[in-house]
Image (cartoon, rainbow, N blue to C red; front, side, top):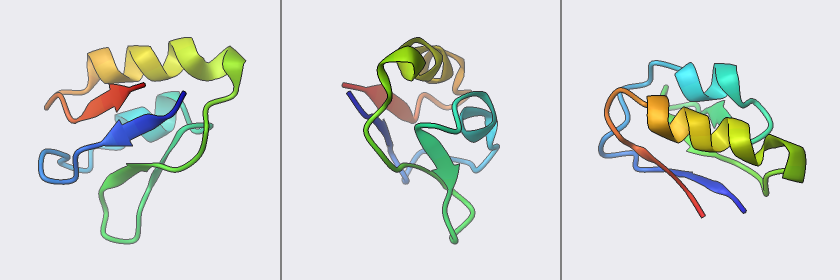
Length: 61
């Protein structure tokens, strides 16, 4: 599984990178990005980040 961030929706709040750094990071443009396959023990954190995203920019699949 991997986390994906819709760059058109992302506002760069950093919540996802803070709560699931194994799957999300802040890119040079100041927006979040999903950057690697999620380790199995981090999938729940990534799904929670998707739920908590204030603009609904995250999907995990």
